[in-house]
Length: 173
Image (cartoon, helix red, strand yellow):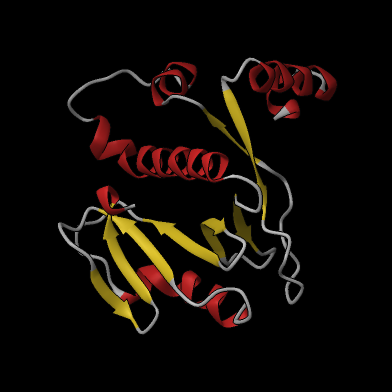
C-alpha cells in the first residue's frame, strides 16, 4: 500500500494505529495453530462500521451497490460480527483468518477454548460443495481442533453441503 500511495510505511502504520486506538477499526490476525502449511501472516483490517468503510472506499449507496460489491460487504459484516462475538465471549475466544501461501483461504476462523470453526462467506443463495472446498481443507488439516465448518451465505435456511459443513443464512450466525 505504501508503494501504491507514495506514503511512507511508518506513516501508514501510524494512521492505522490511530484508527484502532479510536475504535474505528480492528486488525484481524492470521490463524496461528496450523503447522502443516506455510501461512500468510499479514493481518487484515476491518472498519468498525460498514458506512465508514464505504465512505473510505468512496462507495456511494445506490441501486447497483449489492450487485457490484455485495460479496465484500457481506464478508466485512460477518467479520465484524465474529470479532465482536469473540470480544464479548471473553478469554480464549478469537476471530482470525486462514490463508496459505499456495492460495487456500478461509475467510474466518472462530477460535474457542474447545474448537476452531472455519467460516467461509459467499454471496450466493445456491451454495455448492465447491463453495466449501477450503473449509473442508482446513478441517482435514486441523482435525484435532476443527470438527465442523460453515459457509455463510444468502440461503433461506441451513443446508448440508458435506458431512461436516453447513451452509447457513447470515441471520443464523
